Image (cartoon, rainbow, N blue to C red; front, side, top):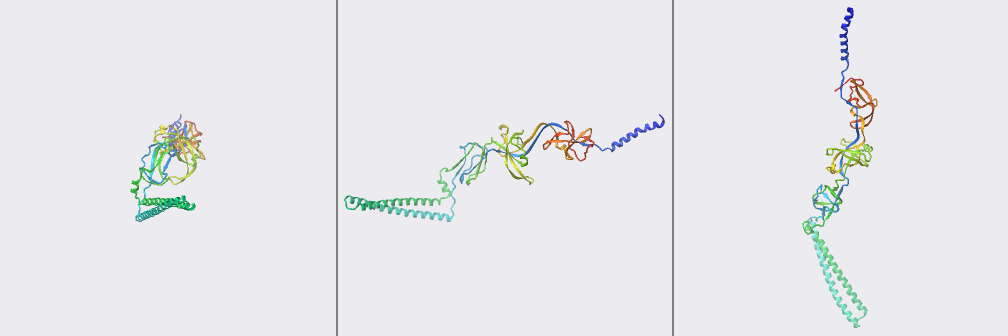
Length: 401
């Protein structure tokens, strides 16, 4: 080896090292990323909304008549028995107080009734006197007729006069009784509320009894007071017959079907409750959301399928979260939704392989709010970027955090 060759060999190694260092420094730094492995596992597709519990059949008891209702003694939660438990009692309303003019008119009516009674009594006295006279005349006519001193016609006229006076006496007595009733009626208008209550018996009340067995859910009118006919007083029902009402968006309700499984969460217990779709109401309605947006909602009724002992603490009107299961599988390949993005109209991911981000198109199946089913494009165990961003492209160097 001559001197030139030795010189070239001596300087080639430092020059190559320096060139490699320049190339390495010129390369972009690897992007730190989070990765997750595609894995098989269960996937449950649900639609979730807040709902509230309610007794299946709530009976609202109302006042059958207007009157003064006595204080309701039963309280919410009390047991009631059909046809036996008295829930409320309604008695007649006390008369109103009379003003000065009304009192004067009532007193004048009493005086008029008394005068009419006196007039009727006088007419009765006159009718009785006339009857006494025609009775004597009839006796005399009968004796004369027996002795052939008067004709049969004269006797008939005496009998007719007797019967006429008898009828007049009956008429006069009826008039006296009528005038006495009018006097009592006029005097009643002078009764004050205090006098009326003192004259009343223990209770000429209308008693309202429970129509079914169950519990008092709510007392709507507890204190004593005047009620009108049809006014709501109590709500009763059987808490053992509990269901859940949830208002879903109409576009979500059409995806549901009778009998679908329901997961009930955030009800206060340690474990979720099980239920099923019992009824989807056929009528939708407009509801304004918290953001002020008008939405079409549909009520969905959910029946509890767990034993009563598990959900016994629940009552009427309690808040729960209900998730209706639309589709579920125990073994699917899945990824978090955060790892997926759209590229050229297709779902794609970045697969991390030997420190390089590799763009991969995938076929997505069912999705939830957090995860998606991967039908094609990945294999179990493939590492993908969990949170891809604009700084990452196909071929970008990456390093795991």
